[in-house]
Length: 105
Image (cartoon, rainbow, N blue to C red; front, side, top):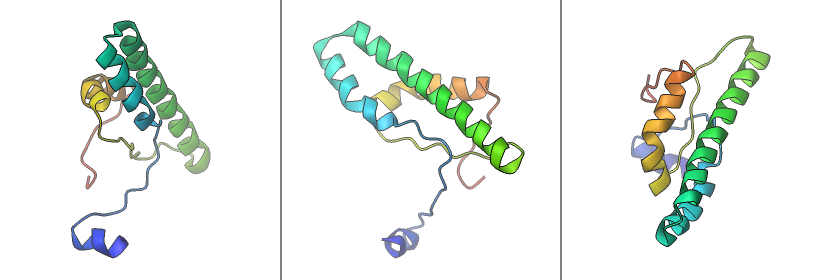
């Protein structure tokens, strides 16, 4: 598989921030389909809270391991909720003083 992806220009990115965003996709779709706006709001708030917690943990780990802040790579999965939460997530990252850049940078 590594050769297949490399031949197509893909490269491995070492992930330092992940908060299981994928686990929100199915519940979000179900709640949205049922018109459960309170549940959708709760999922969005929880999503951001978990993202924030994961960011804080990754920063603490980098300081503990390297004695400094490192460049982080956040793993996100495609899904309807991530599409809706892109702007709030970017705002959270900027609020935490992250510069969001493409992977090659």
